[in-house]
Length: 74
Image 1 (spheres, rainbow, N blue to C red):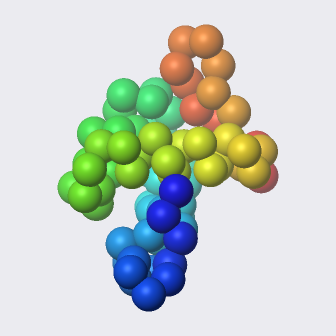
Image 2: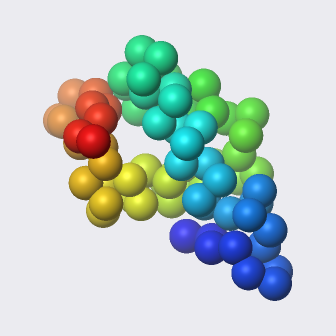
Image 3: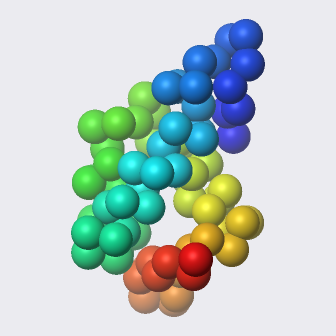
C-alpha cells in the first residue's frame, strides 16, 4: 500500500484509487475481473489493484464471495 508522502503524491497513492474502485462497483461492475479491467487505465502497475482491494476489504468496505463478486458493505 502506497500512502502519500514525499516520494508518492496523493494521485499516485492507493488512497486516490479507492473512490475510483468504489464508483465502478456502484456502477455495476461487481465481478473482480470486470472491476480490474474497468479501473486498469488508472493503475500504474496491476499490483496497485490488489492493494486497493486489500485496503477496502481490511476496512470492511467491501466483501468478496467465492465466485469473485464484490459487494459494498458501507
